[in-house]
Amino acid sequence: MHRPYLAAALVVTAALLTGCASGDDWSTPRTGLSAVGELGAGFLGPEKSPAPESTVTPGPGSWSEVRPSPGTRVVLLTAGGDRPTKALVKAVNAWAEEEDVDLRTVAASGAADLLPAVTRALDLRPDLVVSAGNDLIDPLAAVTPSHLSQEFLIVGAELAEPTGNVTAVDWPGASFRGEGLGMSSTYDPASFTDARCAAAVRAGAAAVLTGNTGIVVWLNEP
Image (cartoon, rainbow, N blue to C red; front, side):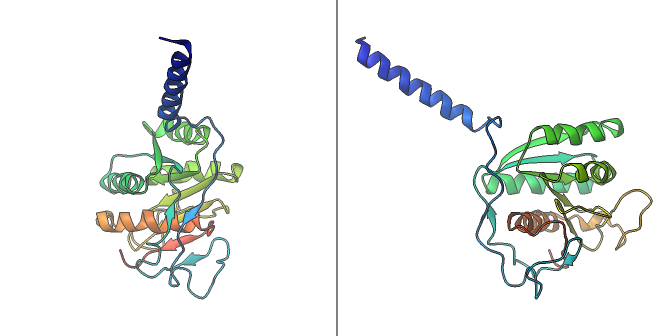
């Protein structure tokens, strides 16, 4: 092969290899969260800028036009094998696939691994950490105030005193706040339906993507 053709072939091969690897490489600096689309008028209600730790009750579907930018880096942090947690994990995976999210999963192997699992998720430096599983609430309450530059989304539970980087989505039947703390509604595993979990993931993501963080998104309708 003549040298010009050989050089060209090597350049093309290198480009192809780089392109294949880029989708799996999180070592490059993250670009941060950005939204495609806007919230509907019924999401925030009259309060255009909700106060920290406040609760908003969006109208059904008012989040449906908001999507993450393709390639957004998300870590699904999960613990527990109960049916509600499995339903939430299923919903997060479906959302990530539909929206071209670059998703990685960190699963705690047991009670002793809860805090280490949170650390492993943080070490990946994603754009967003999505938490599924009540067992993670107490560890997240301890860790999140020290990582204010990292956005967290908790689905199906909440922190009692969240910092501005922690957003939660709850509904009647889902509002666990940690061991020994009361709930704003009676816990009901049956409320974790596929439709409810899917809506919660999308509504919560829409809130975070549009900068409405540190709040609780309360869903009355799936």
